[in-house]
Length: 288
Image (cartoon, rainbow, N blue to C red; front, top):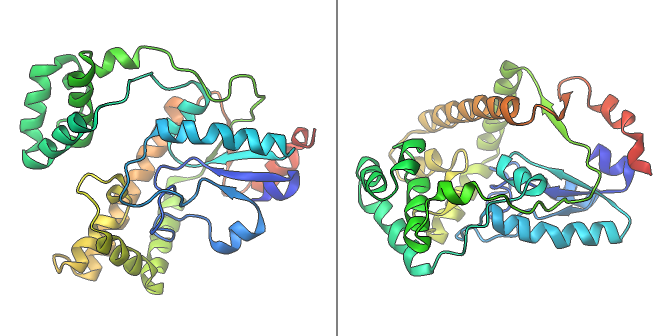
C-alpha cells in the first residue's frame, strides 16, 4: 500500500486463498478500508464453493495488467502463492483441460479411499509421479490420476513442457519480504487470537459451513478452517482449535521461508521488520 500511494499503484492479489469470498478475515485479505484507500484487484472475487487454479489466475491477471498499464498505473502484485508467481514470470505447463466426468471421478475416489490406497493406485498408473508425491497428499494424487487418464501422459511429462509467462516483456522489480521466524510466529499467533476475540473467524467459518462446500473445495485448506469447523461440530474446544491453528500456521511459515530461500534466490530481499519504508524510498525508478 505504501508503494501504491507513492507510485499511483494498483495492488493485485497473488494469494490462492485470498481469491475466495466469505473468508476475508481468516485469510487476512485487505480490509474494506484498505480497498478504499488504494485500488485492489482479484481479491474475494471467487465463490468459496468453487475450484480455482493457478491457470485460472494467470488467465484473469493478464487483462487486469493490461487495464492497469493502459491507465498509466503501476501494478503491484503481492501474495504468498509461489505457483502464481511462477505462472507470472515463467509460465505454467500447458496441461489440457480435464473433462468434468474424469475430474469428478478421481475427486470422489480420493474421498472414498485412504490416502495410502490412492497412492497405490497412482503407483500402478503413473509410478514416476507416485515417486515424487507424498502419500499423504490425496488432492495432488487425484490431480495426477485425472491427468494421466485424460491425457495418457504423466503430469511429470506435462511439467517438463515450458509454459508461456504472463509477464513476457515487462520490466519487473522482484521483492521478497522476509523476517525472523520467531517474530513471524509471534505476529501470527497474536493475529489469530485477535480474529477469535472479535468473533469474526468463527462467523466466517459458520457462513462457509452454511454454503456446504464440496469436500475437495480448495478453500477448506485455508489456515484455521478445519479446526474451527471441528469447534463448531463439537469435536474440539476453543483452546484446542486455537492451538491447532497456531501450530499449523507456524508450520506453514516455516515451509514458506524454506520455499523462498530455494526458489527466489535472485529476488531482492527486504527485511519486513525494519526496512520497508527505506525500500519504498529506494524504488524511485517506478515513477518513470
